Image (tube, rainbow, N blue to C red; front, side, top):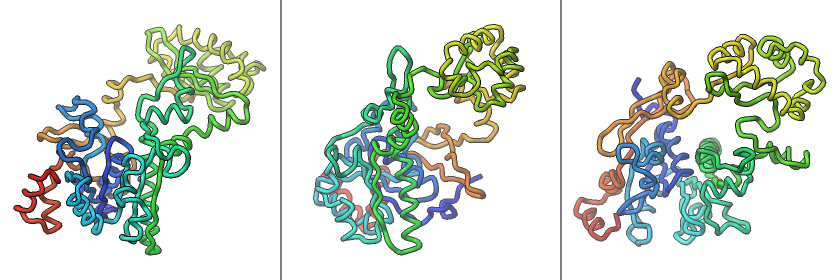
Length: 399
């Protein structure tokens, strides 16, 4: 199926984004997937610095390819008067403005939410910051791993030998998701009331929401969940065990019915069903070490495929522990046709995952990843700039 942008839910919505790195581009890419016109404002002479995070995707950055399909790129020097004038012209025709500039930069350029509301009352501004635009850390820069550290997330990952970062930019992803949903909410409110409201999201507060369960556990339990690798900190048995062929299999028991099935059908230890040490989830967590000895011994008798088949028969949720190569070849992604080809700068196409939310009778847009400034001439032409004027702006390094 082919996507027709005019038929998508956000067709007719224009988003201007002064964005870089991950959080803001993730939010705006999702808007573009749904048909919004997203104009990405980049620095002349290099663009978004995420373009240079790596060069693994046919010379392009894996981060940038992931986050920037279906967008238009215009280069503007926002430190120049001419660059800010062009941005103002773009904003006058936009519905949404997204920015994740350094602390205080938007306000200094007159792009803060309050200033924009006075000039452009129908515009929805979205600010993505590190620690919020007020409070004692408003002036601090923040990057993903710093926020993972500040929220305590790093102290929850890893194992008994030490803490570890989450393997993806989880704070950026959290902030981008909340910015995306916040913008959709603001668009709905404007459509129903005529009132445009500003959206603000911080990386710290987005990830703080995601660590709420261990925060409750720590506040009321007196100690935080331990670091135990692929074992679940507060549910047992729930973790990965090594089968006789050396492959790891993860499974979980979520209730007493499943515990009984595990004991009788997989462990072949029906006596454990009534064992007081393992009567409840809390009991099993308290006696995790003893329980793991029993489970590990059974896995040592079985190959990974046989272990998963027996767990499946017992109605116990299980999965092999994949690496990324295994994930790329996952049969669910292939069978459900979740890959689409997307063009990247230079004309090469690469497979990209379609958005995870399926809307009935709606094909998401999977447009090209733009080169830096690829659409500058077209965008400026749409604002009424002639070819000679555009060349002058380029010679002056405004664009």
